[in-house]
Structure formats: structure tokens, C-alpha cells
Image 1 (cartoon, rainbow, N blue to C red):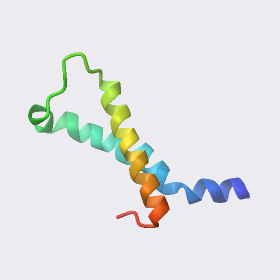
Image 2: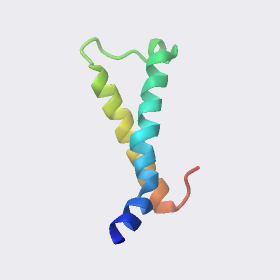
Image 3: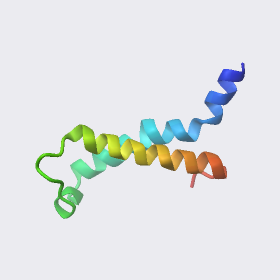
Length: 70
């Protein structure tokens, strides 16, 4: 039961990593944003997804620590 409570307690972090990060990466790739902020030609798609997921995880940690998602 303690594992489930801790898992649910970290829900903002899971939201940031599993939903917010990939959504931000897709917005970057599918919008004109990538023409305004171009990446070097050697950058792989997985690096962009990874960076966005790290950002989402950091957002989740801040949301979890402060208790506010927005």
C-alpha cells in the first residue's frame, strides 16, 4: 500500500515525463517553431524527445514540491 501511495504522490512527475514532455516535442516538430529555432543537422529526434521529457520531469518535480500543477 505504501508503494501505491508514493507512486500516486509522484503523479505530477509522471505527468511531466509521460505526457507533457512528448507533447512539447511533437509541438516543436509539427509547428513552424522548428524553423524559428532550428537544430543542428546532427541532432537526432530522440535527443529532442529526451530533452523535452527532462523538462517535463523537472516541471513535475517543481509541481510536486510546491503542490501546484499550474
